[in-house]
Length: 210
Image 1 (cartoon, rainbow, N blue to C red):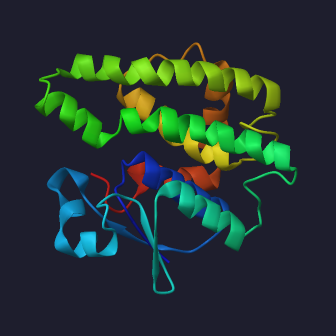
Image 2: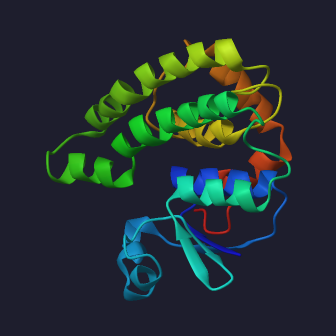
């Protein structure tokens, strides 16, 4: 498997976490979003949307991190990232979607670039924009973890939801979002900081990192 990604991309980060939790071996190919490498002819031929991550597997290319993570769960079911019970699986998927659908798309690199270049936003305004979406999302997730969590987002082992949460916490810190109001989420972040799969997935530990 070859994972095409950018070291600081939240979507690529969550794919690395899932691959690592599954104990899978994969190569990485850096795609520098800052230089426009994702718009190159070679990469667009791989992924017509021109976005990361893209995962090459046996002659096929998977795109969109939710699809990649679901494929990993179906193809490599152990250790599981989704619970056995259907209702519990829905809860975990909802936690993941809370981040993947309602927070992350509004503060990724291309949105920040549009805010700066099209609307002339200074960094403080970009940070405030990110916080506007991160804070209410984290408030909801903090409550959900209070109901379902036992050391991780759902239960006592990492799940699909944690693959989404940890990159979003990393992003929140980059945007200077205060996180003191989310002790449960910070406790999960602390647990991930000592977990080998999460450590190996950290942006600063990637071969294409600055």
